[in-house]
Image 1 (cartoon, helix red, strand yellow):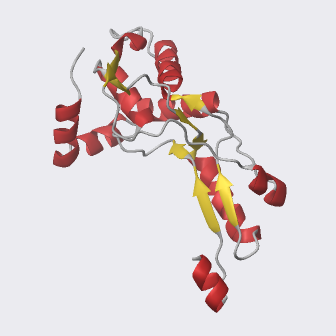
Image 2 (cartoon, rainbow, N blue to C red):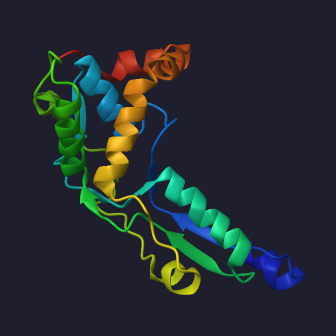
Length: 186
């Protein structure tokens, strides 16, 4: 992209983002994986010690940031887009379990945190992903609207209200086989 900008004047802007979450995410991603596992009483896998740190960005905030970059950035600029938070995976999953405990008082799996299962870490698993969003804030006045807790609550509520969408995804042969291979009942 930068080469075409410099060589041919192609008006481009570049964005780099942190981990996104929100509605319509696939089951192999951590947040939906934790929600789906907890709701169904499956083990919630935690890689290694769970202390890998990630910055989480609510999907609507990401979309708004990209649109702002499209409309207002100078060609050739690059921006980091992040949620402005950094949390360990284990703390994120515990927060999800706590929210589910509040929303699903009658769940036979409460407290959901009992479903946490530590598994071998992935080879080369990065300890930290973080985004410095100072430039997009300074140059374009953007910052995320959703805090992690409010975004997680919206996300969890959406998935609880859209079980048909989840079923349409996990019933596909490729996802069903993946889930059966990777998840076990408590």
